[in-house]
Length: 74
Image (cartoon, rainbow, N blue to C red):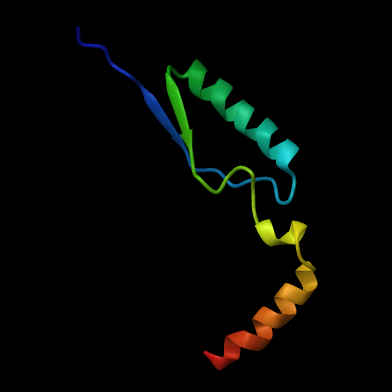
């Protein structure tokens, strides 16, 4: 049996630092893809749970200050 599977690729940006709104955005794209005939929708691996991961475990400002201090030494 020969069946056709229609796959949609969604290259979208997350809602910055808002996992719940990112999920809502993904749901809208899933519905839209379904309406256009997609059987499967694929999102990029960095979309959910979102990024940057270090904000929940470190002081974000400290990270940026360190990064900008370290960058010129490369």
